Length: 155
Image 1 (cartoon, rainbow, N blue to C red):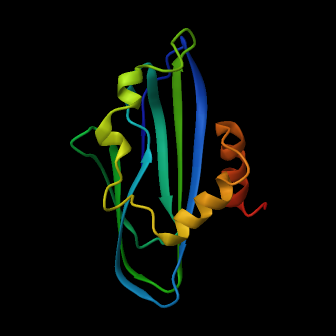
Image 2: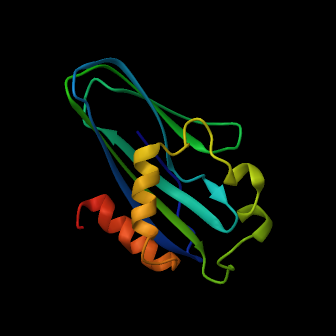
């Protein structure tokens, strides 16, 4: 599935790419995944011009829409998965080069965006990983680098 519009020459393009894999210890029937991996079409000074989402299983039924907050939602249904499924998403976004890095401090600190939801609440394993990643530093860039290394297995 993909969508495209024309790039604005006053914006600097950026390619965002994500790969997500799920491995199951036994077969799964009627698999349903809701992915929120595609940036909004427009958010402050940022514009998404194109995106593509693919699923490793050719029998996957993919539906793309928006939620109440205008987030791009990718719903995936697969009748049967033996042991593994992979998702790949890329988005081409741009933002005005003269735009401030932070659109609104209020938006970044909005209470409803800072609270976990039932789908985003950290379990014991994720809590332990976060504790390990932040044990030696509180510097955001260092934590980000360690998190990326952990996520790619380059520990």
